Image 1: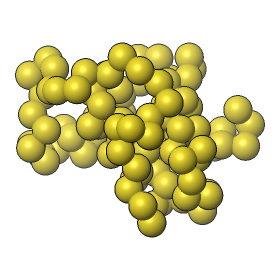
Image 2: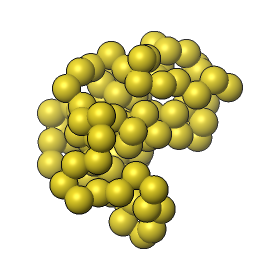
Image 3: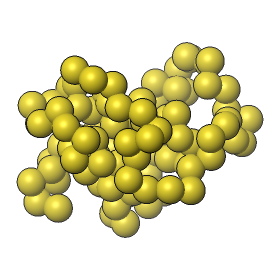
Length: 95
């Protein structure tokens, strides 16, 4: 499967670098638990990972759908990775 990149994102306005003291090389507990939806590299990683985990088409359209769902109004303020994954999986065919 192809890993999609920043060029494949459908939305704009992401921070191209680390913001708020986050470290892209840090792979500790918080990075496994939380997703910073404002940082481009985290959104790309999240979307690619979701596509690998679930039986959905591995297309740019699906990549961008994960991205859109990640930013859905119902997920405003939610940054827990597992909660985000579960909500997107549950709502994949509804939204």
